[in-house]
Length: 225
Image (cartoon, rainbow, N blue to C red):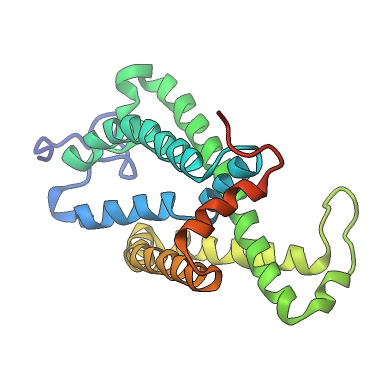
């Protein structure tokens, strides 16, 4: 569905916030599913699972906790996204229904602040991953100049962070279609990498039961009763 009435004369109209015509909505169910795979199958999820196990959960308790968290977040996100996918209305305009014209600006800013915070977390983790990979090849990077207590990083760590940040900024600069292409390729890749890691661990340990039982050794308290 799409808006057929000309609203360009409205004082609230903006070309950046105008409803997207149906002919220009190029995201399919596969693209949206790919976004969800990228959001759920990522290093922070692995870190969360390992930290839950470290704090005393066993593997299935950590798995259920993460699954439940994703499902809880999924429901309101689908409700928010419905108007956009069906009518092409962006979130800031949709927020006017609940918060009014001026209130929607504030709500959009808060949404942007959350996105900036999460972008920083993801960028830090991505940069740290690159640093750890390089550290296995070039151990001397650990002794690069320290940038002070305020920054808390050495030159190599800061460089990896900025490098990963620049990649993200470049993708964002290229526009929403570049994100669509990236996620379309990344989603199956992430799933395959996860499967590969599982097979690698299975072959390395010898049996799946030993891998699952190893979760008890990551904490001093065992599972949560």
